[in-house]
Length: 99
Ligand code: HEC
Image 1 (tube, rainbow, N blue to C red):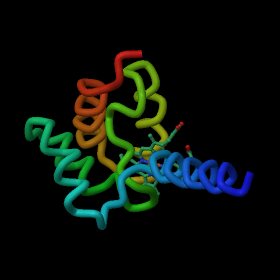
Image 2 (image 1 turned 30 degrees about the horizontal axis):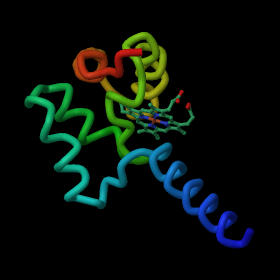
Image 3 (image 1 turned 120 degrees about the vertical axis):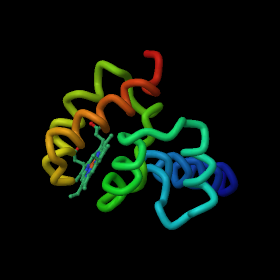
């Protein structure tokens, strides 16, 4: 019983870690995550602006249908200009999860 609870706790911690996104201070993990996207303006802005309050919520964590509403909210928080917002939206929807 004790062991099972321990395992559940571990799973919960791991899931919580994922939900918060990639820790920007974990350079190796950040590099690994971003190396699979080709360079673009949106990628650069995302890397600069989108892990100030939470970890990186990489494009594959949401669908192309979910991203526009989220970027609307987050662009305000990250104080993006309209151009930066469009670039980030293009980047995340391009690599969004399929469904
Ligand atoms: C000023 C702080 C701040 C910045 C900067 C910021 N966020 Fe957020 N983000 C939050 C907070 C707070 C939440 C949780 C509340 C919410 O969902 O609105 C959140 C939630 C999210 C979520 C989860 C939303 C959901 O519905 O599951 C995603 C994805 C996200 N942010 C992406 C981004 C992206 C992309 C950027 C860069 C453009 C960004 N954030 C910049 C504060 C920030």
